[in-house]
Image (cartoon, rainbow, N blue to C red; front, side, top):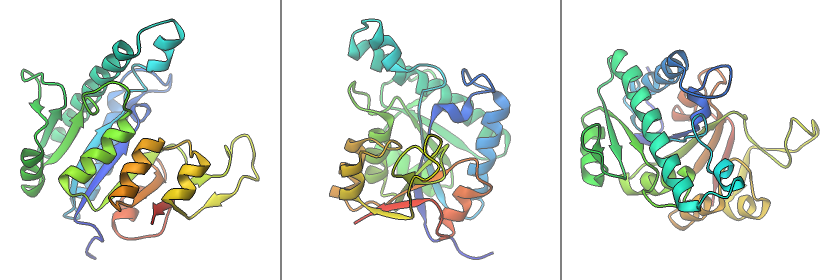
Length: 238
């Protein structure tokens, strides 16, 4: 087996990855599919931390549209990410991958508090680490949490596994002639206001020279191909 290009990665997945056909809730079959993709990467000897989103359970903007206070909406989203983290841990454990869930908001009855050195220790022992509750603060997205945690644990790359295969100049579903980018600089990505990653996350990665690779989670073996060094998706870097 060829050696992987990366030793430690941070995988950011949207909550929709765990949803069923309705696009809402947690579908155990989808959790198993995502867990299988993560296991494939771990089987290459790569240390994997995961930050899940919450879009399959709660979208803060829906609450805001009805006058909900922003902090309340964001805290609800953080709790939803923990539900996704627990579902994914269960699926990974059933595949034989020892897994730990850590949360930025303490809830010690069901998960460990996020502690950077403890997360690193788990990774070094070959465990998957799923980090829930975002940053623990309102007004920050799970994309920003993923960038922050990636730098804290010393990940070599942030993999944003989403439902599009790359970054485009426009929505390719609306404009089939939209330009597809294999690479972008951080500045170009910020100026374009790319929809797959928020500007705070990109800025954090730029300041710390952490490359971002955007891939389609559902493209066959996409995450595995990334860790093996294959050029797929869009790479955002200096």
